Amino acid sequence: QVQLAESGGGLVQAGGSLRLSCVASGLTFSQYTMAWFRQAPGKERERVAVMTWTGSTTYYADSVKGRFTISRDNAKSTLYLQMNNVKPEDTAVYYCAASYRQTYGLASRDVYRYWGQGTQVTASS
Image 1 (cartoon, rainbow, N blue to C red):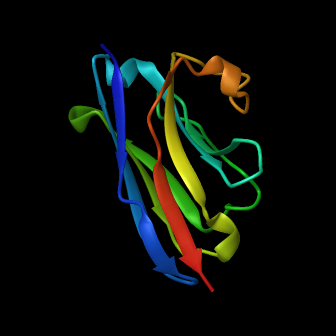
Image 2 (cartoon, rainbow, N blue to C red):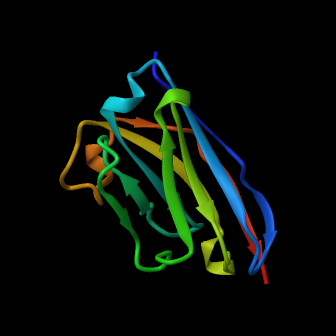
């Protein structure tokens, strides 16, 4: 049974930092392209950042470039999202997602088979 468990969310002041973690179990983590998505109230779920299964390529939404960093530790089966200079518009539920050896179409929710339950990030102004 595959499980993705996010943690690290919470309340942060604008300009502050948070680090989200996603621990994977039930799959061979190193073989999966991993992504962070987020969904704000009344909005569609959007891709925030992706790291391909080889670790050689990363993608970021324009809104987070230069502020957020995605990383992974295959030995710990863990995905991270370092969030710096957080803004109120970053407020959302953040989800991690996994796709087996996927290298294209990474912005689409449809290519990700496994999803976590999400962790709430609230940035106050």
